[in-house]
Length: 116
Image (cartoon, rainbow, N blue to C red; front, top):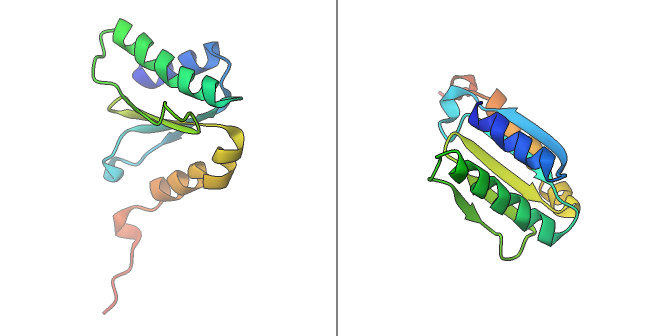
């Protein structure tokens, strides 16, 4: 099973809300996918990140980093080719990160016009 699918399955099993997968253009270079999901509380948001890390480690993927779990408002899980953003719903709405990444993925560097 692909890394992205393992992460989405983990989020689904742990009752994450509004799971969205954004495919990044190869030219972005940061990762292949961004996964965005919400939890109902700071505790759930932090736990969603920890469970992803545990499950990936169990599958032999040791290089998983988590940031923001101590506050639980916005947790980032860096699993290499997949970066996961986990939010409380109001924080997710405020940052609207899906829009930012969708625009970035659709705007390749060749799309920019250079001023002459």
